[in-house]
Length: 382
Image 1 (cartoon, helix red, strand yellow):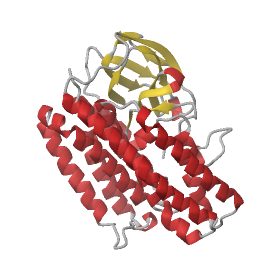
Image 2 (tube, one colour; image 1 turned 120 degrees about the vertical axis):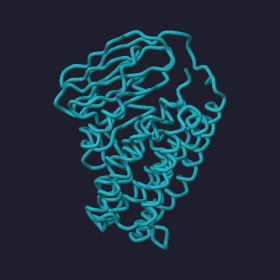
Image 3 (tube, helix red, strand yellow; image 1 turned 60 degrees about the vertical axis):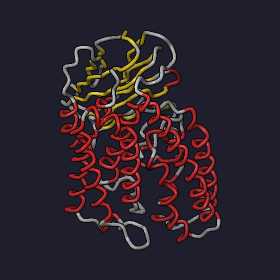
Image 4 (cartoon, one colour; image 1 turned 90 degrees about the horizontal axis):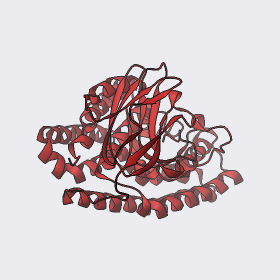
């Protein structure tokens, strides 16, 4: 996926906007704002201006305006650069709004013009009682518990799949390794917002070649993907990297219980998964050598739908029209994907998908992404 983050960045609750083109449109739709209590963030190419440096813990709205010439990202970092919440791909001249639950403590808000580096940072203080109170609505507490269980199940299922993939590489079986590449990624792709949240696990496992930062060694799935498809070779280095991939993913598996998950982070994560599709899958950037993008696409949609379904009892009560729209749009995008599912369970190679068909995928993702961006606000307990 992204792997844009430096290895010091960690944690959860991500919310992105689609492609650079979609970002402007989606962000404007998200920014209904005018919320008088919102923390306003004005981002430029050289500054990150924050309207409040102290505010109470609990539900927080960040209203972001990108007044610079570069696409930017905005993060809230906790101790050790733990990501509390974020928004990516905010195009020049556009706005975005984030709903998040933030506990009392010391944080930094960072703007990243050009979506690179450590960002321009402002220190903030969130006041109130320390710790995290249980959601007022027990249905949301249940949704959080169920989602954590789901994330753990996906991580647990990933390990034998990636061990089989690594085993084929170590045996020098090029064709078998190719066949096991996409299945080894399913659990990760379904829970990517959680998977990315732990330290340097994401940069080590899911970085694309053009996103490798200075001083970083390229490892993980996409390094092996290039070896299998572009180079058509398996050497000693690839065998070592296969073992490392297994070890890094086991590290992710063990950390799931410590993930900070809230109802808003689940909703934001669902939107992030759709934006992953728009940013990396539809463009063909994600699996550029294997062209297995549609398998990742399907997993992202499944993960987003799981988060939505768990939050649906509350969302449907608070915003029934939004719930109806999301039900319809998930049905539509799943039907579109089903057209490309082959008899053996694999998907059509993405290099065989025409530009017109990619446009249809883009339209479907945008159609789902816009209402999905409203899910976090629909489950906020006020």
